[in-house]
Image (tube, rainbow, N blue to C red; front, side, top):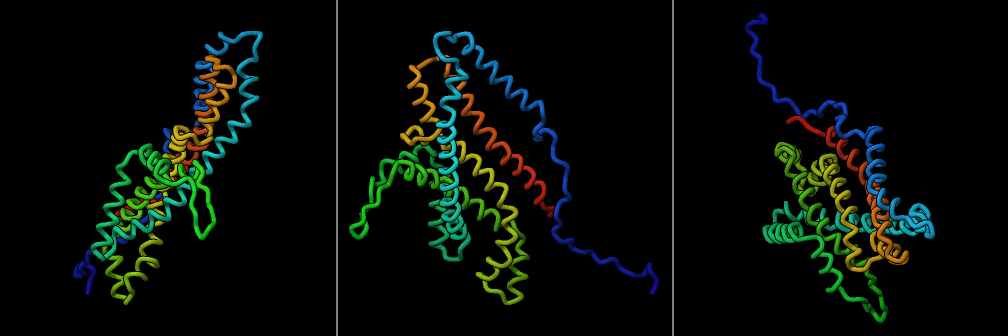
Length: 283
């Protein structure tokens, strides 16, 4: 049989990982970004320089004096964000798996809970947790206090739970149906297929949106200042009040808070972009 008589059969190509692309220069942290940020902060602080009274401490001295307290408050913001993300991730994973359940009541209830908390304002959920949760719990004669920061952490974990639920559901549904059919042909149960085949492949796809959600949550932790939690925004207001309400300190202090969130969240955003390109798939 010669080569001309041979038939070329169509072949279904497997899902291939996309080649590593060069990071987009538009999102790369360049040297001029730092200079631009410093220039903006200096420009915004010009009124503070002009309004400084020689008899009072300069804004740099005041900011340096309060900086340890503000940094401690920012660390508290990070603790709240990590804790709320952990609680929301665990609850959201369970809720997301419930959305793909074969049991109709479980699937419908999981979908309803997800849509309710996913489309509710974060601030409303925060007030919901602050005012409806008790100040303390009594279990077997043991009194467990529930401070405001714990309630705020729980309130912020509710929208995280709903968004993680959608991330899990979308990650599972994004895989080709052939994965399920191939596992079924090998006599895998649904639970074995989910835990050994489907979810390990979904982790890479779910990681970038999960990290993006964490960045959003970190920036939303300042909402806790509205309900009296002593985080960086609350401490900034208290520091300004302790300085006699000097208007020339408003821009420097809040610019410093803005800078703290930027240097923490921007690397996470950059890492998210890299992971999206690394784990991109060609179907």
